[in-house]
Image (cartoon, rainbow, N blue to C red; front, side):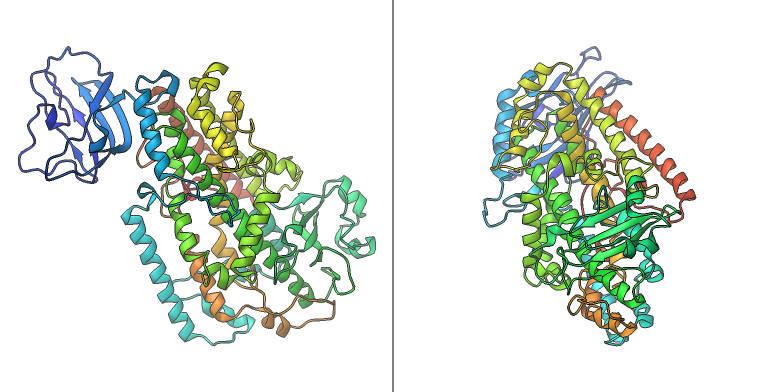
Length: 640
């Protein structure tokens, strides 16, 4: 049973929630029902009673009813103006006995008047939120068993299941009304019965859009400034000369116009390549591919493909590169680095921060649904015969191997999760470099706003270093994030012990950014990019090209994935690209009622509105608008 609660007073009395405090129950009304706001009256209390500093709550129930109930908040209004807020956001159980909550319920543990109650509550949560102990899984450790509180709301669950069912029905209609083998011109027949025509249909051949997708598509954080051409990329000046606008490669490097993407991470993953590609920013500031080598080491059967090659030979090389990029994106950039890393931190969060902790109240709305969607993903996607096994050429085993390899050997919290460090590591933090890197430009607006939001709360509560040192809940959270028995995050500021405010701000802001902005960037453009198999597919049929002989359109058709895989991709990518939760900053059940939190959140909302106006204005000037990070498109949490 769940219930919201409200207390509104008349000038000469209080209305109180609990009949066991001597207040008569409301006759013929079911009290404390799910989603309900209940008002109870207490008579005979004088109007000068004073401020309400704390409330005591207990769930005595009745002999025939022993339900626990979830209380969102209690409000007390004294007279016409005085309002006292008690956010609870927790279960009130009969077994807990009497519980006491301070006004606004937001304080550091060392200043709590209810330390024993707080620790008892955390001990119970540690039983619910346990890290998985499966040593065979070396991806970020997840919750061992999904706690009841982390399950989807029934309405969202129903929406999710009905949406998938409808998409599958639409695909069945397409399957039975189109040919089994389609040529390029017939691929558009797939987009009917409710499926929009993806943007890739119109620009799949374009080198300009190929480069734009690597800056502003679903995997926008691999492009790296080239300070010297990697020796393993067997290009020559003669090969590059037609593509560098009259510059030598050295001149292009000096002018910060040469870039590369290296997928050495994919070595050893079966069925796909581990390419390295070179890119050049032309005189229109477009990022153009100038060389693609599909394996790491030069060899007679591993040539460098160039834009000057035969049209279809070049297209085929780009398809194989895109398969590698799509595979890394889906396994690492999307699933591992946003979903799994943040959900892992969520286990540490719930195990160590009391619901009365100011940082718990700040972060809780952003953790909503991430464990539930991951649980859904492991059941439907990451299983034998699931989406990864069917739709990606590297299959489930390759996906899991890649995630484990990338997380254990490559990923670092400070370098890869903290956004400013991530773009700095790749040499692209300067806005003059890659002027059309819209993902970077827009995401930085959010990073600054989130840091400002978090700083307002952290600075207010930790106005002296000793408060950080003495906050055992915060320190336990840091330890759990860093410990091999917890999240096992490398590169964590403070290495498992917070010593200053900046470390706290960086960690909290990074988690919120990745649960909202970064996930939006790598997730919600998937349909437009993945849904057209010639544009960006996790499955290319046949073997990689091993020579530069002239190919034909027939070779491109032969490289398409089987129709059944393309239809499966339509379902998954359309579903993943849908939004059905509140935008960033819009919190359905507010958690912060203290002046510091309310003020910081109000300013955050104003900052997000300014960000929306700024991105809209930028898009008016952009030749390819970037809408993924408009505030209306960035959810408050990771829920799909």
